[in-house]
Length: 306
Image 1 (cartoon, rainbow, N blue to C red):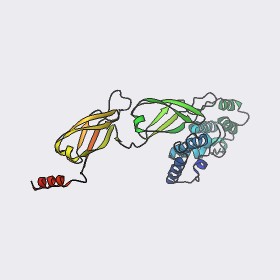
Image 2 (tube, one colour; image 1 turned 180 degrees about the horizontal axis):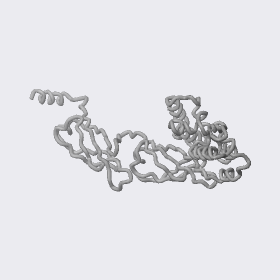
Image 3 (cartoon, rainbow, N blue to C red; image 1 turned 180 degrees about the vertical axis):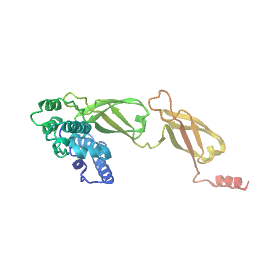
C-alpha cells in the first residue's frame, strides 16, 4: 500500500492543534462526502483518506506513533520490542551497540524502513538470521474507516446495503435500530497484511439523517400532531402516523395544548433485540380556528360570558 501523508491529506502542518485537525476534517468531509459527490470514485477515495487521517491524527496515542514511525506506525510496538531486545543484547556483549558499545540507534518516522531493514541496520550483514527473521515477520494490515448515511426509516429495518471502500464494494447487513454515530467493525475487511499477516478491520460509522416527521431519542420517537379546537374540546378520533402506518387514537374531551400521549411499542426497534421497540410520544398542537363567521364569534362570546 502506498504511503499516505495524513497531514497533507488534511492540508495541515505537523504542529497543528486538535482544533486545527477537527476544523480541517469537517471542512473536507463536507466537500468530499458521497452524498455531495454521488458516483464520483475520486471523491469517494479522498473521503476515505480524510477519515483515515482524522482517525489517526485526532487520537493522541495514534498520532504519536504516526509521527515517530510514519507509514509503519501500526507496528510501533513491534519496533519498540525489537529495540528493547537489541539493547539487552548490546548490554550482554554485542559490540558497538547498546550500553556496552556506547553507540545508540536513533529510529525516527522520517527514515523508518521495514522491519528487516531495521534489523540489518542494528546488526549489520553478519546477523543474517535476524534480517531473515525480520523479512518473514507477519504484519497486520491497516484498519480502514468508512461512513454511511441512512434515513431514519432505513435505520428502522434490517437490510442489506453495498458500500464503496477504496477500490472495493462491500455488501453488509445493517441491523434494525442502528444509532446515529454508532460504529461497527467488520473483521478482516481492512487492508491486507504483509508476509501472510492478517488483514486489518473495517470500521463503519453510521450517520442517521433527520426525519421531517419523527424525532428520535434513544429508542423512543416523538411526533407533533395538529388537532382542531373542536375535537380538542369535544373529543373524537384522529389518525396518527407511526413508522409502520397510521393508527387511530381516541381524543379525550377538553384535551389541552401540548398534552402528550404515549403509544407503547410504537417507537424505534431496539438494536439487535428481536420484537422489542421503544415508545412513540404524540404531542397535541391545538389549532385556533380562523375566518370565523359572525354566528361562530357570537357563540364564543356566549361561552366566554359563561
